[in-house]
Amino acid sequence: MYEVDARGLSCPEPVMMTADAIKKHGSETIRVLVSEVHTRQNVEKYAKSQGKNVSVRENGEDFELIIE
Image (cartoon, rainbow, N blue to C red; front, side, top):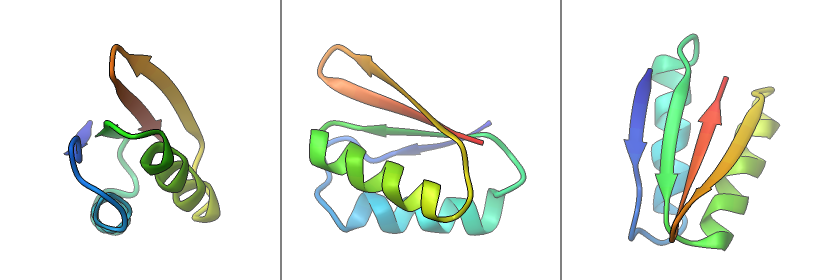
């Protein structure tokens, strides 16, 4: 599993990091950590636009997105 830790970062950086991870590691499961609701939504939208399945889990103040 490839991990992207984008906690504390504002868009568009987390989306760009996710795009890079999908490009380089698209055949793997990707775990993305973010700390803002709007960032979670933007990363989820982007991953789905690339044909990926996304599951989201809230971890305290952070969000974990699993992209497959």
